[in-house]
Image (cartoon, rainbow over all chains, first blue to last red; front, side, top):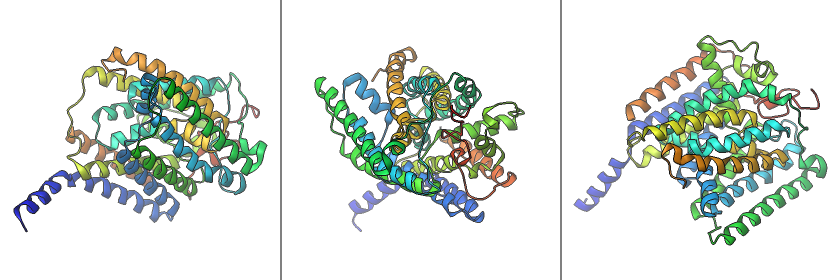
Length: 381
Length: 50
């Protein structure tokens, strides 16, 4: 072996952080083993699907918060259109299967003040927190100390949101509007794909008017295809489109409960689904399974190529923005029936109108959030 | 920051395993949408039902 070859291989070895790769792989293996011992292969598939999503998001640097910000500040629409690729691929399976097969369902939600206020507040928080629901997960897994703060406050905010949601629902609203209910499974799919094409054309038109690029980068195209396929895998394993933030709400409620808080009088926690999730093992909740997998997948991917979590802590202002953004996203996600993944990707990929309403309101909220960033010493871009 | 990460990861992992071992776990993992009357991913009821 020549000296040059030896140096190259030692440099490559030095780039891998074996401690954190081992922690990530071992933690994933423990979770997979626990659910397999319970005889739940679908749960193991959800953990592994989440792991794959963590790797894909980190490698593609797929960021909803940053791509929305680039569109709003500079007019660049490539990132946003890349996000639509994910939805289009997922919709190809979710719309017809949810309509035709028992045991599968789309991501639906009612339209009303709760959705509008929640999505708007989420958009504000997304720009302060520097990540959305999935972004927070994979950047936490990727070794960002700042995003640990965002996640902690995201969890607190989502528990607060669970206490606020029933009151907002009292304000009224209309039942979910699902394209396949009106047009059938295939007509619903055509309508969903047409809405995505229309959105892409509008975004490209705005970008062109502002003299900006609207073509997704190679990373976003490949990442979008891989993430879209993984969304389909998660859908088949869990029976519903991939969702993120309900897991945060369950974790927070379990922590608060352990600290002595009583949720027996909280309306949200008396609904059958949340009540069941609070009583059962955290590994009985589909969104928690993919969330855990995603964190450890991103950790393994990040540690495989460099020394993990080797950045200094950011300034206090940035940490404060992380906390405020986290609270707003958590609260907004509960009122808005999810984040970019559960409400926007899952909703639109199911042909549910609430997904587009969520997108419009969160985009408006992002405009406000971008204006607030300088208050915390952060750039608007 | 690495030490913080090691502590947070280990505490979280112990909490997950502890919660799983000490809580009931009935059958396959579910989402709140799987329950009757759910109208949203969090299990909220439909406005028309109310």
